[in-house]
Image (cartoon, rainbow, N blue to C red):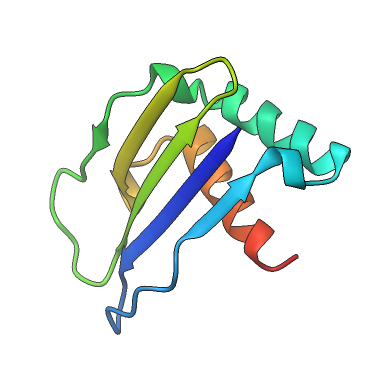
Amino acid sequence: MHLKLTRTGGFAGITPPPVEVDTAMLSKKDGQYLAAMVAGANFFDLPKTFQAARPQPDRFQYSLSIVHEDGRNHAVLCDEEAAPEPLRQLLHAVQNLRRK
């Protein structure tokens, strides 16, 4: 599975480089954990966008695209506060891979 996460917005408006992850390059444990997070978020069934009811300045916006080994391809754009909790957990899991 290939994942690409981009974060924009925030107080200073600084956009860090995207996080790109290929699960084939991860340890077996990390790859399985990430696959479970994707499944738990029902990522491939999510709508393409989640927007906050009222825009809030200085909040983050995330774009996550995933290409699965089985050929499924999906992307979600979401405002930080509008993301459902399972998606928010997946976003944080992918971000944490940058630190490894």
